[in-house]
Length: 249
Image 1 (cartoon, rainbow, N blue to C red):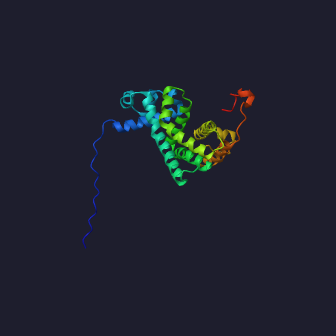
Image 2: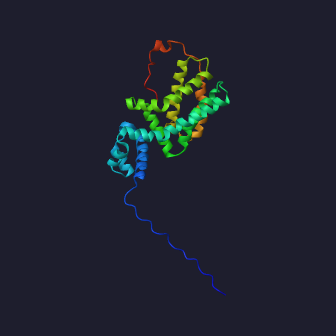
Image 3: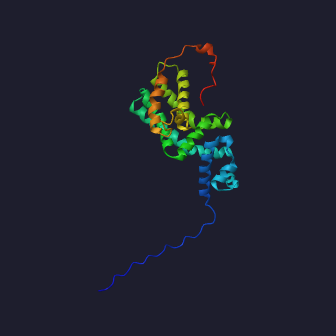
């Protein structure tokens, strides 16, 4: 009886060794490093040298791809920022079509505004880095920061403010704008995952339970949006409360 021949296993041909890092890999490494460091330190606190060191490249490569620190921040931010805005607009378009031009229920409107950001928070370190970058950006009073906010957010924010006004006809447009700002401040602080929830809850809650955060924020923010109108001239005719600036940080 013939002995079956044993299949021979041959090693794959050797791949020629590449010299250095491909430029496209270097670009991605720079963006990932920038995203992490801008999230930790903000625009002003992050140097190009730190980005180069973390990315494992020299500073010349950063200048080759991005020219300026502002351009690097812009591109790192837009990697997730554009996705966030596009998803919000898609969800809003769907809801407006489903309601045939009528008002969208308030809780649903708040939910579709928040869901894309919550999904980013749940997507991993890159998404959470973006949300921390976003929190830093809101405190940036520079012309660069203002231009980035206008470029990315103005169109979608106006759409949501208009939709909120339709859902809250009892409010003046100015009140809707104020309350939308409160929505922004709430979700950006919550999803920035500062660790304060763990401290204030005595360890009973976890700030990275982002699905729980969504469930808590929607009714809270809806109640705030519906709250009664404060009397004009309240709080000592516009004077700041005596304890202003002493809130927990």
